[in-house]
Amino acid sequence: QNIRRSEECFLCPGGLMCPAGTIDPDDAVSCTLGSYCPEGSYYGNRSPCPRGHYCVTGSTLPEPCPPGKFNDGFWGNQSSHCESCTPGYYCEGFGNEEPDGLCSAGYFCAGGSIHPNDEIARPGYFTLEGASSEEDCLPGEYQPNE
Image (cartoon, rainbow, N blue to C red; front, side):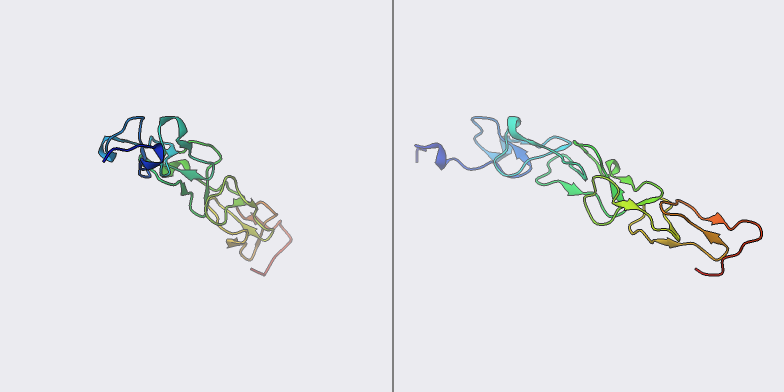
């Protein structure tokens, strides 16, 4: 049966790019690293992988960075583009483009922290907001609480 209108053509499957005149999805090309290709993609309309995500070859949708990590750039093409959250900061949830905020006073975030109160300061130590490690109480002072 002859196709008489462009509306009768099928959309290219997700994760692939179909150049003009593609006859079969087997002739399509995998979406390139750092981009994703929803259904109906071709060379000129592939989408750049957004911040907070990464896209491997053949991605239909971007993969979000996991909690405790972030990616502040576009075109991320592997999970290692999701960096551990900066010491002193926390990265809650999935798809972080940047750290969510400073760790709370009385707690510290050594790096890769998910919550602002991940690690509590031990007795004999203290931390200020945004601390990446504990600090000793000064000579002549003490701190008995966790």
